[in-house]
Image 1 (cartoon, rainbow, N blue to C red):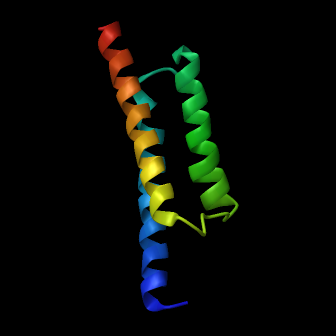
Image 2 (tube, rainbow, N blue to C red):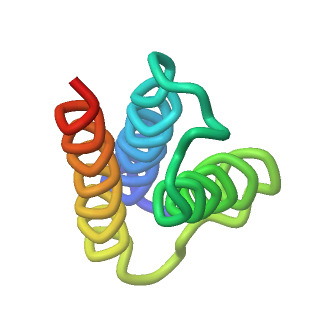
Amino acid sequence: MSRQAISLCILSLIYLWTLYNAARVAPLGMVKRSFSSPHRERFGEIIHTLYIKYFYEGCYPSERVEEDLQRWLGKVKAYIKGLEAGVKTLS
């Protein structure tokens, strides 16, 4: 594996870890059981993939890494925006 490929893998892992933590920290101000069904499902998907599958089990994406990163970035952003919208409607 080339140095460039190794660097890309390391950056990808850091990026995925950051996305996981953004999703994990976002709901801290809310009680999890008060989440609507879509938020619980998205949270579960994010935790299962970014933490359990990728980090805990080590099953990282090996192809289309950039596309996978962009897809997860979009999912985490949408999840956090959904939480923010829910909080705004409660206040």
